[in-house]
Length: 111
Image 1 (cartoon, rainbow, N blue to C red):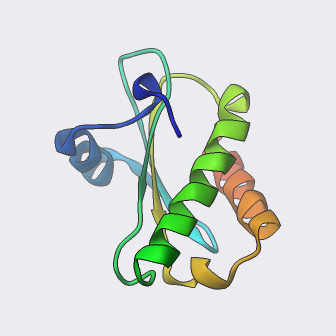
Image 2: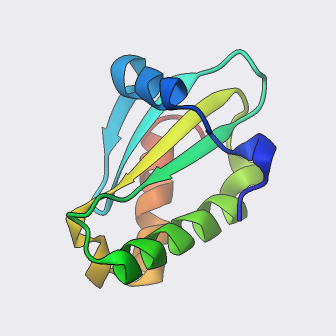
Image 3: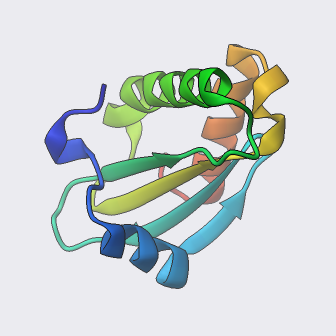
């Protein structure tokens, strides 16, 4: 679980990331990144019903949260990161998700 100060809570912050953020697609995720004025990173994870039923969506969110928690200290500070799970995340192995996350973060120049 991400602690409160690491989470994006408000809808306007999500909308700001979607409208003004840099969109970086990966194989299993799409990431929207915007700079914030807080000085620390915040993260939000979205899985739609297109991903699957509740069990599949919650599993994807748990895996993505674990990846973000492990990578937290390696990322540059001062950004809002919104991670959107793609439909094909259901069949992906965890190590492939980790690799895809780091590829996307390198594209965004955050690691």
